[in-house]
Figure (cartoon, rainbow, N blue to C red):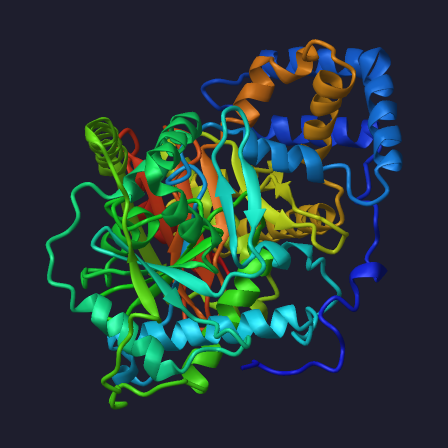
Length: 600
């Protein structure tokens, strides 16, 4: 029933973590902001005059309103000694957003296939993953899951991993957990099932019993449900809050409680077309909406060919908890499987083990479901995806050349965008601040002056010149290394809470919500708007258990850039909407990989 039993309790280091995520000096934050802004000069929306105006406004802010707002933020932080200054406002940012969860917030990660191909039978793989997930849950809740081993990290988010859901409400959602839950939610073809995974005595159910339940669900020959309530979770949060209230009043309280309290959601997909980037994104990022419940903390999806993925809601936590769970489940399910592909299943009454959940929907509700489905198909239909890889650059090669793999990938993204569009773009890379209690994330602004100088040199250089002109190649090599060094510096600063985005976020929140002031002018000028209209939203997906992953763009004219550095290659998986050339960006980035290789 356990992955392992650590001699150190799970939360052993929790009280040792620095309580205060540091609040940078106001002058440092403003200097970093302006420095990052200057790297965007040349963007069609931002010229030198706009940046000059912002510098002038920032200087005024530093002299007049800024010090008082900053002092108020510091005092509020000192009064809230149980957490960091960013925790509450950051939760509010997610929970107050009225945007639909799919495409806007929920990302996905796909598991590598089980090395034993026979174990990739859909029901066998699903059973093993679920049992390993239950082992993780029991190990965590018994506090014998080993603490994060490299160095102490905040593990408070782990308590929202299981039996947790986001509940829609007008204006602001809430997070709810159900500690006594003993079942998972299984969805297939739009039909919902409650499947027991924990016995009354607290032990994990017999794997043969679980596999029998999942096999029975798979064998359901009914056509896909065209009035699935799953579509309703794809709508904007206020609409979903109102619709959910109507569902509950229509006699669905019991079924809704079974859904909300489930340990997690498992989706059995019939699709087998998931071995391409397009198929993977179509299935695992959004699907058709009928077999989804986006409010759950996470959903495990298993396709008809045994490919598996995890899609998660973002308000409750970030990558640290998700990746620990993801990795542990992969290695446990593939090295210590609970059941084999050819295990004989008992013939028994399974009525106590799983039940279909039924929902009463009247004509009005059917109309709302049809509208939700139509809107969802329109939104997902405009999403495009492309992927590329390059085998000459890989983790070992880059380390041999003494350059940061992440710095190289981020530079290649800048070069690729410069080749495609001819100008810099606002770029976001997430960095965990979990070295601090209740830490969430800080932004690494990868579009730096150093990266832009290197990008221009590479993009404007003739390929043959990069290959054959030793002097020019040496110059570009120096620029690449300066770019990587600057990126490493920003990454270290961000991890230690010394970025500028979260501090600016806290200052704005303090002015508007603590002091009740109008929004300071620096937060609604052209520069700030351009800086925060993220064109290149990026995230690294490197893990031995991850095959591919991705997310949608965060702006209608942006790109969602998932990338990874592996032992044998580097690659990217990029999404955009119809208005952008996603294939063009991938091609430009891959040629940039080759350019960088020729220089290094």
